[in-house]
Image (cartoon, rainbow, N blue to C red; front, side):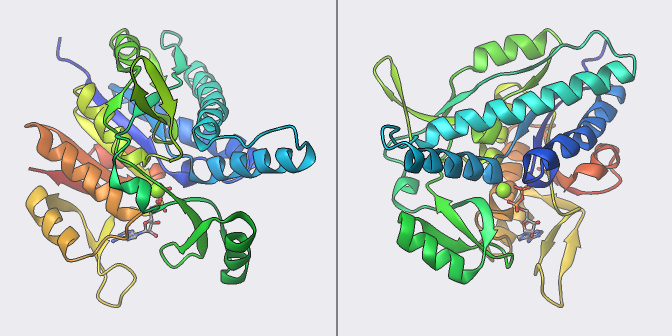
Length: 314
Ligand code: ADP
Ligand code: MG
């Protein structure tokens, strides 16, 4: 029997929405796209971002300290853990329902709370770059900088957002358990929000004040699971050069070499498209036969059939 195509599918912000009711509705659509791929005969592992959600959890925990001074600040690592559970719960619930609705009763769904080790000397700790939370105006951003000491940055022409440190993932702590579950045919949601960032101190794993980019964590997971595909689902159908300019050009097929040239020329915005392209290039160049794809959630089936999206190969 030929081995099923193994796909690590990374869900972007628009697959989850920005509020509790939005997420509840969004995961239903997301689950349909994922189960479509399972019906196509693929073995799927799900990862997801958490930018808006970790911002929301962080704000809620700050409000708690204002309400009750006995409550200390909640570390960002704990906020990431909370976001993994909150998103994982909605996703696993919706995926289970979608599978059952299609008569698929032999695929258990579970979320793995995942810690991802980062290097405490990663230069990213000194240069916050990862946008989290909601978009705000310039004036609101200035007030947040004053009130909370946040660092606020403009994000791809869509407004201002808080930025936090985003170190590179080095090791997925729970990889053994994830592999066992995936190998036994379970539908696993792992490395949510890029994973809970931790640094190693002997046997102790210490939570780090950071949010790992889910695109990099998904790439590491895909390599560790020896996946055939890394699919990064986002808000655009394809990757563009000269993005947003009159000479914008959407790309269908991209060699690793060409992608590296475009990266060097600065075509991809840091914190949004750049990490996706970097992750796609890293995965596609890591082993013969590995393909990365960047496309829209609604186009994932067509994407895997080779009909759309931006495809990265050696
Ligand atoms: P996600 O939540 O899926 O991680 P991001 O907002 O981080 O989404 O990144 C996707 C966004 O990157 C797109 O919606 C687009 O606005 C922006 N972007 C920046 N540069 C490019 C580019 N060269 N081609 C396509 N999209 C780009
Ligand atoms: Mg992103």
